[in-house]
Length: 408
Image (cartoon, rainbow, N blue to C red; front, top):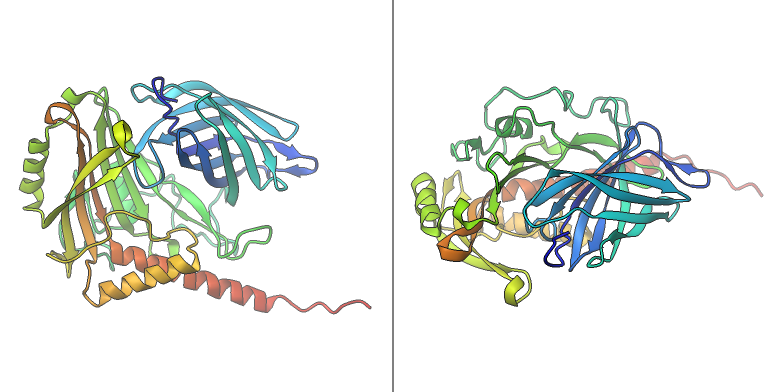
């Protein structure tokens, strides 16, 4: 995608199509299929995919690297054709064009009885990608498998007016904000402040997927807001909600500002001065490197504000980076989450953290900077509760299935 290196850097791919992909196997009408996987383009990268059977458009929204390591870089629309179990998509127009990038198409085949798409990016510097279906999101009313509304109000119409902090949030009562976006509130309140016109993203949660899913219901999911009002400067806010069973509270809020033009970015000294004026002196400073060694690597500096007992505290905090297993965690991830939560509850580590990370380019000007608030305790509780509820639902369902006597 990049016209001067091998940076085909899309991560989130939203495909909106309607089709049959093999003999006798068709996508259901008026549904949105949710897919996820990865692809190779100068390195292995993650991809999220939506396939909407009620429309005929396609969009790419791509990241600079793997999930959780970088902001969304840009997005564009494509046209597509489907024939003999294969899909071919060609670029149409930019939606959000980053400097130095070009649009690319893709092609792939439906395999594993339509549960996977295997193919490649239509660019010489890119290679294979593989995605698999993880759920179905009805495009009409958002209801659970029992016919009850899973999200209390229509996601396209409901913007919560209440400004009361969410019960259970580690940020509640701290009166902290990121660019006027309050911390410690429910997802819809947080999103409405970030952009009152932004429609929240939804996805299908299930205790068990597959051909006979258990406990299916819809919930709000990670939603990003883009601000490209300043030419050459990209601003992205991403809001992460807990699952439906944990109140759909915003457990993570991130705002990233980046530009390829150094003159449009602040200096390191200017950022530190602004951060200190707003949040006070950081408790500690750290750094990490993203990318391989050499010219492709970037060093990020971090200003840390650990939070414990509703105040900024000088306490160990390991939650700046990494994923605690928010989507169907394995046994190992579940055990790690349980161990980390035990440390939090014993007071051995922080409950939440506010962290400002940035990388410096030429003339002391920043390449990018990120302000992130992460409620570690709430996120860990959400992961553990999600695992427990899924196991309970599956066990209840399996025990209700009647025995079938063999016919001998």
